[in-house]
Length: 93
Image (cartoon, rainbow, N blue to C red):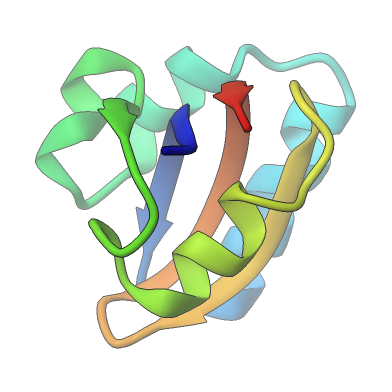
């Protein structure tokens, strides 16, 4: 079974999500941005979600995590929880 590890940042607005993505792409540390801005409890761990398989996260999340390039910030991705920036840190297909 495929598994992946990823980290994310969850915020309430698409605009804020895009601003944070721009900061990270400009050199800001993903984990630091997650700790400062993410509304998810994982933010305190730098956005780390640990290892999971398909179907363990919402479908919008899975679609990105199991197809995106590794170590590249993806998003904004809208889910029922808000807007996410995602970074896939490893994947075993």
